[in-house]
Amino acid sequence: MNNQLRNIFFQLLRVGLWGEGKPALIKPLSIDDWNSILKYASNHTVEGVIYDSFPFLTEDQLPPASLRLKWAVRMDKIERHNAKMDAIIAEQFLTFEKEGIRPILQKGRGVASYYRIPDHRISGDIDWCFEEDDYSKARNFLKKRDVNFKDTPDFSLDYNWNGIHVEHHKRKFDFRNPFKKKYLNKLLEDYRGVQGRLVINDVSIRLLAQELQLLQVNIHILKHLITYGISLRQFCDSARLYYSVLPNIDGQVLHEIYKKTGILKWSHLLHKLLVDYIGLPESAIPFPYPKEIHIDWMLDEVWHSGNFGFNDERFGQNKEAEFFHRPDSAKRLWGNFKRYLKYAPQEAIAFPFVQAYSKFLGKDSD
Image (cartoon, rainbow, N blue to C red; front, side):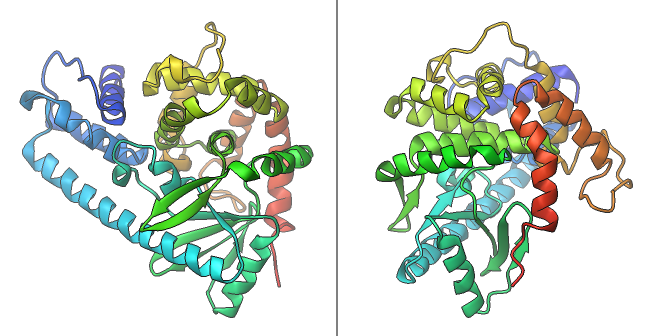
């Protein structure tokens, strides 16, 4: 995609995400242009956000009717999937609670509630974390129920529940640096009394406190940037979350959290990208960032890598290493290590050690 069309893509993304404005088109886009936009929207799992820009376009700015129909069918599928996911979230939450297990909904459908049209935010799976030692209780519950789950790296497990992929996470945050564990546990304890709630299918679902939701969403982005990349969907999550919760939080407190967890310099990059490309009003940023920082290099990496780096066309498709899941893994990991070492050195340095531990020694095996 050329730079002009990419610029239009981001204009459409902003219109759909915020529900205002319209793209500045010199001439109508061709069917090939629209197919390219749809391809990249799918790669970044934001086809729902782009679709939400259509009501704000004039007739000559809209994609051809045949493509709009194809897109509408895709949206219907997304809406149905999200409805099924909501039913399972409510069912599982109640089931766990009856067993004395206290789940907390992470990311996904929890973050979708901050969008203009929550059912158009694509959610790949259901992510649960748990209060205190309830991860072990939930794992034992699955064993008793004969649920066919698999322990995975990153201190997690996964399984299918009525056709929906579900993950349980031991850790609330994707920090690699093990020396931050004590501070993160203190944060969880300090904010326990102000946890959030989200009503899904008449069930009040437990969420982290808003400050910790931001920390969770943003460190998840950084984790994947340091590895293989991440899609624009997660940046939209961060933008909508900031926009929605900033009136309720203290920006200087968040500044201190980012500083103590070692991600303050990187958060400045994130915030500038959210303002310049995703359309988040600068007034919704919790604290100022240096105006002279450059982010185009980071946007280019995000743009090419797409959803967790699976469709990055810059790398060979037949060079998958024995212990990795992406082509040219070593090259990509080394490149991202060098890029982010300056901005989040503790996370970049800790990554290979913690990844090796979690992959070979950190999985439950009983």
